Image (cartoon, rainbow, N blue to C red; front, side, top):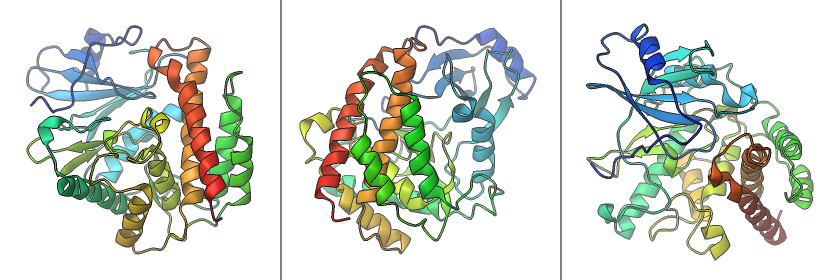
Length: 355
């Protein structure tokens, strides 16, 4: 189906040795026949994702980006473990088959998982779906329902009780992202000083019920069924997952949620169809989340501003690698502009906040 997420030619400098990968996989996965055709999924700015197409089977390979990187930020073994163990409590995780720790095979650790074939929404809703506002609203609510379901997973029962340290999570995130942002500063980067001071001053207590925190939950990490596009059949990109405050995770997702009334500069950084008629506003998103989770969220400003600053930190870390010539991906040249827009939005929210 044309709507199914498509791959493209591999970006220059990010090629993989098909013969080496084939030989490795055939020693770890039974029944493989033929040789794989390798192509690359175009999305993603962190770990790289490839499609391996054998004559009668398809797999997805994930590896860290090329160039210098902090190993803790691209831990293949951790993501592999999360997929394997979380699947019992949250069956939307792809199944992971093999984790290669021998960096001599392709120059980095990697893992291989099943391909969950379906539709992934990007910046615009495909015209072929022709959803009306009520269908778009239902899809939006389903997206939030899965988020709440994830936050209600019994992570101890999944064997993931040691995945993170929920105590002190809010403080650790604010201090940690301030440190990471400052380490990735370039001469053209905004300082975020007023925002950093505000976040330190307005820090709430940790949420009393810790949860699995996805840390990157958005529509382009969700797979819809090709047969029934209203149905979510997969959730991707678990590299940043930990245990912590679910409202901080909500703030992360709200930072990506560009609504229809946001000004044009913010529309330029939209990566999902959150502006479509029927999609909830950020406040509506938070209200629906709170209703489904059975909690109260008196004010979302702190969590939203945190999400904006964290997103700027991620953007700046990637731009820093581009600035130093450690990646050739030309998409990243515009990330400094995105950083500035995020700071402007955060300052606007702070200026209007009742906190």
